[in-house]
Length: 92
Image 1 (tube, rainbow, N blue to C red):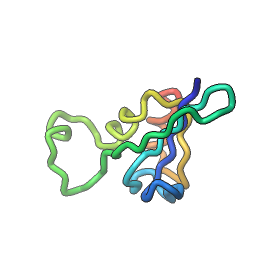
Image 2: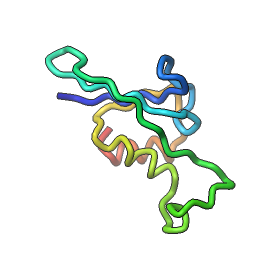
Image 3: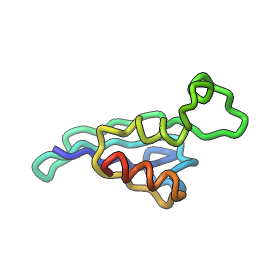
């Protein structure tokens, strides 16, 4: 079994930028077939966001990756180096 996460704004198209996407579509594949599809909300990065998570020192980019930590593959149109490195460190 493998899980593939696709950054999306509408559930249909691949978002052009990982950090700006609204959701993740999660496809679970087994024996070459899709066995489930799930749409997850994605944590967002905002310079004006003073959420509890930031107060604890957790960067929103880390929360984005943690929300898909059960996935082995991440697909998006593009991403910055910090997000790329977080994804690599998470095993994607």
